[in-house]
Image 1 (cartoon, one colour):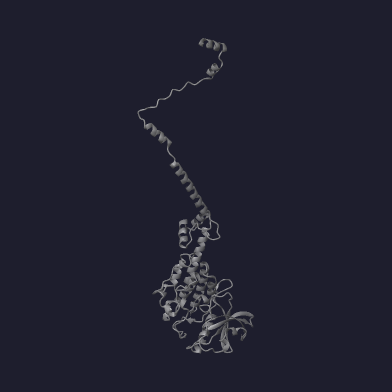
Image 2: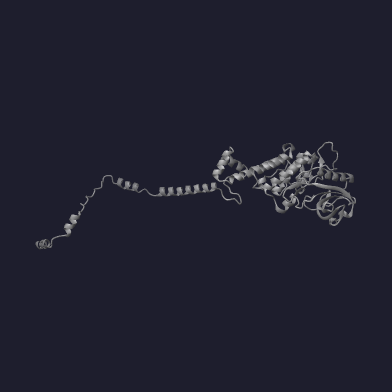
Length: 426
């Protein structure tokens, strides 16, 4: 519905009516039972306006056919527009935009489809930047389901890109804009008089040779998923001639260069869907949706296990036949290591146990270093003895211990005897 750069595409050729000379003039006009309220977007084939259905009393998106470009017969242009309406009307799927009505009025062809006021996936990425990988996987799986349903209904979209995935109020996506639709049946002779049609940034390389298939649609969808993850298309393609260089001189950069938190298992799935050789891609769109959901389910299972205490983690892995080593290897494969805490989550018991063990080991190492570093005094004494081998130490004779009676005898001496002793001395 929107042009690739998000700017309204100017119609080519001579306008059939002043209705398209200025898109602001769309507002306020009436086509049949529809009151035109505002311009929503425009493309090469049609303009899209917000309209009010006066009969059913609801808002719709009204797609109005533009004048044909030079070189395209008006009948061919009109037929392709009707084919889009009929193809979309036959697709009843929760992730495909629903068609309500088709008609003509005052020389204009139009059809009414459900109005989704939250814009496109391309608008969201342009406004908010690359999306988290979990949301991209969910939206990509929904779009792949819709694409698989269209392929099973014998239809090729041929212009799948972020601007053609509409966002719902609940945050889901719906595939829209079947303006370049073609039936897969080889008996369908109708087509626009162009070899290459679509948006070059999301084209498969075989489209440069005019080859369209479910695998080329799948390539475009994988490129859209890549864009939602990284904010950039997978290849730098600006024109149809650049498409031929895919697989020759262009290489897909590593996903981790733009999206570091994505699981490792996501990149192989996208690389397979974006392979330059259509035979090496997924052969069905629902294979891509299954792979994206497997990445989501495995990541959520790892998250739930790593959030449990260590004892509970051992019990659960033992019950389902697994082990901690296997869980750790799977977590590493998906970019999540046991023991790491995710944003908003409290550290696990296992992490506290590991930190405590490391602290005890550090204390023990400090004690050992201090013990080993002290000098050995017994060794020094032995060395001093050995330094004088011929001189043996003579033990001193201990003095006899005094008894209490001896102390009393010395203290209680007869004064007369002491005086006699003194005279004798004199």
